Length: 108
Image 1 (cartoon, rainbow, N blue to C red):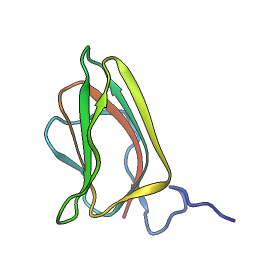
Image 2 (cartoon, helix red, strand yellow):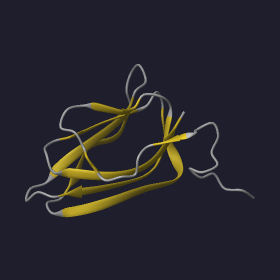
Image 3 (cartoon, helix red, strand yellow):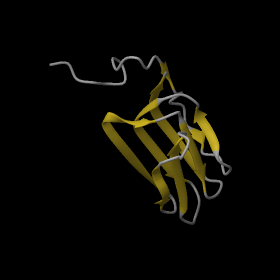
């Protein structure tokens, strides 16, 4: 039995860059079409806790993470083996400068 993965889950053909990037401190669209998120690695490089919020982009946005706290000088990796569906795209924001992320996601 074939498993669903970011490599063969049709119709998603475009991948989000997995390069480490800063999570913005203003709400920003990372994608603007239906998206499947498979893995998210967050690193807090500051001496204080910071939070991250991720939501989809449907007409009434739904939160995947709401003010998810990342402790000072630490990291967390979140994995969704079959992917989590974000209708209309992915929007994210950090509570302050210092959250860096690597993301594995595919979008239409």
